[in-house]
Image 1 (cartoon, rainbow, N blue to C red):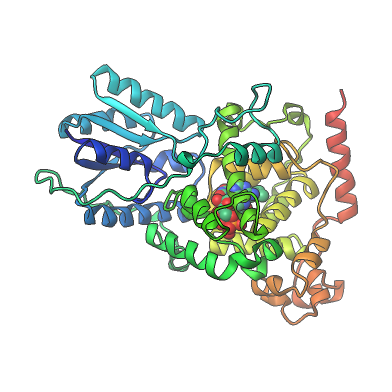
Image 2 (cartoon, protein in one colour):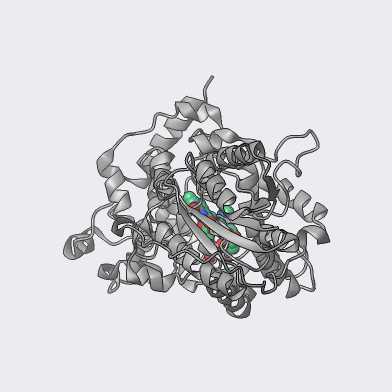
Length: 472
Ligand code: FAD
């Protein structure tokens, strides 16, 4: 009795809950539903779509070694997914469909429609928790609410996590050949969804590349993670986010590998490793929030009163931010990192997001969209969570009066201005101090813009806007 495994944002064979369960039931056929139009509508750009496409190619190779054929369906949007999947399931005469749950609102709706459609014709659907260790809704506060503050969530997570939840599963063993089913040719991506060769080099796709990155992080970076994780030029973080977002590696694999170097501990022991594990729990926190607060998937703020913030709709300022022309070197260098690498360091995501929403007082939606368009790791839960944190509209957000000074942030986290010089080579000949904030004459000579806003004045404008909107 054949089993159909639907791969989504879990492009791997090792420690794949749905695949492991399906393989215990019978011979497996894999399926991918390419919904390019839907993903574009969600805001993903070429960097992510290309990584996804390459990930599918890598998955097909891994599956081939296990003799699992991979069917490719092109369905455009989630709406047409249930019908296409059911048609395939009937053609292949499968006994059951298996997949790992996803938590965005549209994804949840799509999955419910698939389930309904399959049950009408009596094909079983088996769904699994795999992207997170706790099924959203099973980790709540004493009063039965979703946690809206991270630290108590982390404490509860660490306290309640069990060996069963942490148990990893091997890839299935090689199955007998299925003579009548072959792996589909993966149609090329339309040109507009293809990324550049340099981004492809930065981000080789697939579970082998992910495993290599995890190993090199643990060997070379993890031992100074806590000390250096905020310094963009030190490359002290894992750069695994794109792989985790598309499931080329599971959070369990990451957490277990870190714990293995920490005598099995998750929350005590080596501060570098526990701090890294807690970042993975941040990701899980945001996934839970998507389920707990469906309005987050609809573009609503968590704090509803912040709908009254009088955001400025200034296209020129927005373009200057996007293009790295704000005249604040750390902000500009960070935006260049985003657009040239498809990734930005976490400290800089916070700095640039706060700059857009506070100094420029531009709606976080616009920044959230721009990030998604460029990020290889773009993902609703963490991106929305990060933006709402910076904009002070979210759960456990930065209090609105705590506004980073981008120049001070540069002095603290890029003390020699090396990161700035890497992405803004025109500032490379200046002293570190001047790289952080070039003098007016230097700006003119180099052709580097003056600050788009004065920090103190912009800060005051943001404070006024936020305090007026929080008045009753
Ligand atoms: P590491 O420090 O090595 O952390 C390991 C893993 O933990 C990451 O790969 C990631 O999966 C997770 N993680 C780390 N920090 C966070 C965090 N603050 N929130 C949630 N998960 C975290 N992360 C995304 O994966 N996709 C996004 O679209 C995204 N958008 C963001 C937008 C803003 C405005 C902000 C402030 C943060 C955003 N983040 C996002 C979170 C974070 O910046 C990235 O996960 C991190 O920079 C990835 O680098 P790394 O893999 O080297 O992280």
